[in-house]
Length: 437
Image (tube, rainbow, N blue to C red; front, top):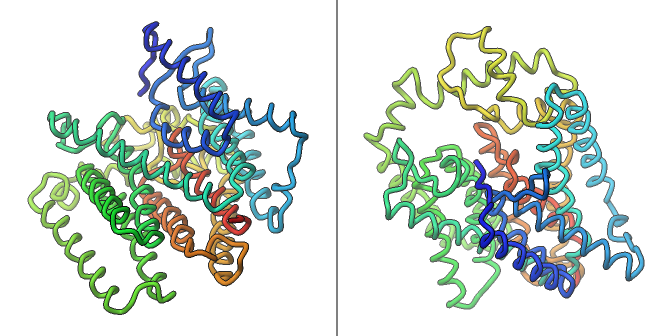
């Protein structure tokens, strides 16, 4: 769902903003990275350059790439940052992902759709991630980029409350705000919430902690109102990971562990209690047309499609078409509007082929190995954890854990803003061991 901007006044504001962005990017590339990340939800706005459609988010990314290239050419091309130790663990899976999605695109039955998805969901977010690798060199820049993601999530959550206040809910009383579905809203806010927890252990000032507490509560309330059970489960997995790790690293005392665990149990109990008697929870267990039954049918169809296209997949953005074509093999579908197969791993395999899936799995394994190695070097002066930043590295790990758990039931990558967030998290995890003060 896009909003095509055609009003000359709005277009003028967009281009004036783009000019200001270019000027800021020329002075501070790291600041420009944060600005793009903050405005990630603007992918919902689309503009046209002649016959070429671009979202506002794509426009900003392309402008940033242009400024970065000009500055590189002016100062002499230096790509030493891409040759650091262990870089092959980043580049090899990236190559497999690109190769897999490119093959799927080339052999797609609808080249126009697949090229558009490949450009918007793979190439541009990945290019932004590579800019993060090249530009982010200090701990301060590292933290500012994560803070931009938190502020973006908090802003979206605050706007969502206006939708709640005016009763702008879905037919089943779930909060979606300006997103296509409540799940999309939850998937964007969940990483921001987990990063808030990372910052909580990073800072000591009471005023800043109070602001983080308010931000965390706001994000948690809005995620709850989406009634996205998969998002709740993913956040819970991330929280448990953080609590266990903080305790094992003696960041949390035993007293704090019991206190936090008690709060977590209380919040879970309140959340479950709030769902008792609700239509969604009851239908989940008793209805033969529940979201769970619908997912089972979608997964069965995806499995049949995958059986016939296991090597190179079907191409990016074409699951809906194949889902319709394969309906003849199944009873009438419970859900018809299914642009993605409700599984992160099925989505990768179907749209990027076996190569893309292998690259994704390899990338995730490399991310955790690298982040764990950074955590083991807490006493080293050249890592971000040397000054207490270990909580932010842990928060990055928690975000990926969230994505993997939520990804069992949905696709927290295959969307413009989610792909951008994913590559930023992966790139910052790669950079975490190579930052200076």
